[in-house]
Image (cartoon, rainbow, N blue to C red; front, side, top):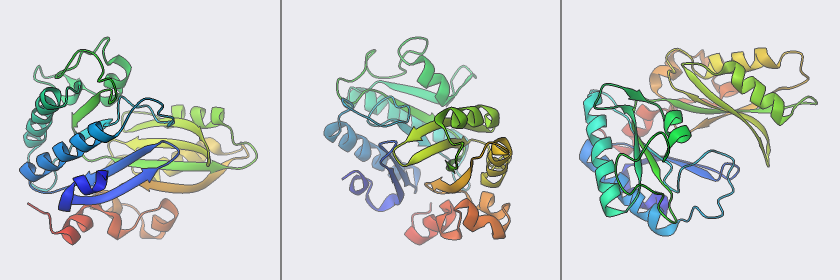
Length: 263
């Protein structure tokens, strides 16, 4: 249902039952991507309900985050323009409160964590009504660089949610956002690598492994959520790709070429 609403621009779907969350990646010419995002938004708001949501991951609404990311030669300003246009449309057409993150008109930079912490209090909606949609909640709409969403599953006699949260705090920094979760399938350190040219999967794996040393817990497996920029794969030793859940056909560039949606 959600995937079909994206049409031919859909590159990847990652569905996670523990977080009760799906990540859909679309790419193509700016106007086509904007149309796919609107189609997905209509479907999500029309068919899904936030009431009773039981996922572990923080969320604002059924359409939690809509990031616009410039690829190739597309300028960053195009992502900002697409973000702002989507906010205006979703606020007016769907009655959905929208919070912008990324560069703002006054020159400030608002992060996604800023929105999650301050929505409807310190941070009012940039578009749409001042209160949450009754069934869909609200949406964070961003303009940002490509990031890598990455999970590390822990195992061993010393594994606890408290340990995962402690490790997440230790590896968190300007290039890494991290949370620790106890989920139905195990304990996880969930990361957004927001500057993967500096801290990519290999670096965060090694940082987590260092924090786990002597605890009786190890990294059981890694999980790439969605796709990874080819530049990040290129700077990762090939002999570590399997360990890190990386491969060539899971790069953004490979999927764009396969789908024929460049431009």
